[in-house]
Image 1 (cartoon, rainbow, N blue to C red):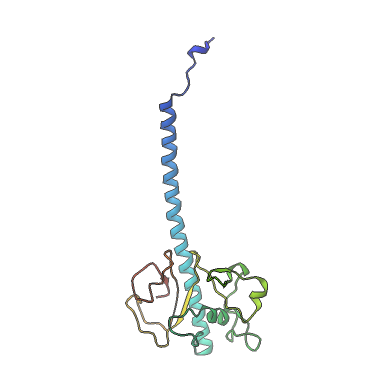
Image 2: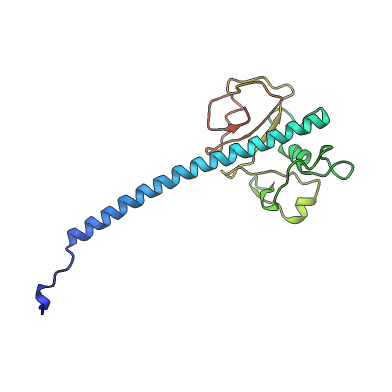
Length: 188
């Protein structure tokens, strides 16, 4: 039988070593999660942009024009794109002849509030044709759509297109306006 005085516990140094190992492992895991999240957000934004671009090309094939020509250069014409792709066919809606070109979930539709922030559209706003509707990228910013009727080509564009659809990326800054290289994720 052992006496109580010979029983040995963990020393302070041993406990500190275990805590240091756990902290190191936690930091490595959190760093990996951040990288995976960044790559996932980029893939989601790229996929959304490509899907929207495919459907706007279908709309163009059906109508011979792109939505959003009534918007001024530099303005985000996404509400016109939303109507063209997701609304009903005329005369009930403003969609193209094959509308709706895409399906949406109510949780994916956003409206701009009075303070300039975006929030999910409620049911009444969803069906109100006067309310401008947007889709939000994984970074919490609205996707941008521009019809390039008279816009000069900038160096960031790989090939000239009649429209641009893009996410402003993780920094939330639209570098396309100045033609700068940035983290924007787009159809170019």
